Image 1: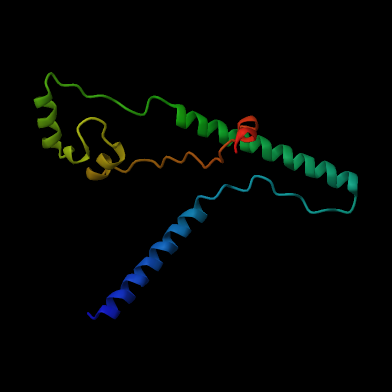
Image 2: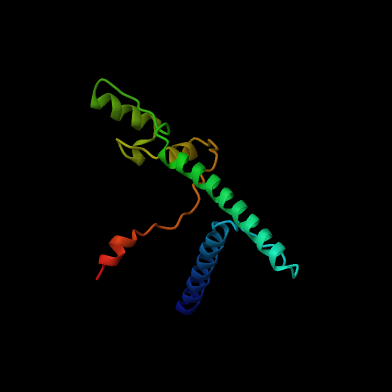
Length: 140
């Protein structure tokens, strides 16, 4: 392969990666929680319908946030395996082929993948950072 062909192949691969990343970003976008009703022309009815939809959207967002909060603060997502000596621990990790992931805190998802175990997806949802107005006012 010539240099030009290698460069073209690298550019094509980079474009594929960019498109894949963009597709993941779109897939992870926040769900639309409010679908404003079509106007009827009656200001009072339209306002009430808009407020009802906004309330529904707030309730839905609160449910999502409550679920996300429970997931990210749950402390029951880990377990410990203890041995009598470091040598025992290291021999076990070697035998299980887990040493490649470290020797103290191991990524459960990677170990499951190694053993062909399909885990349910952990979707915590995306939240925007909350800026403290008082501290933001102090920023230079």
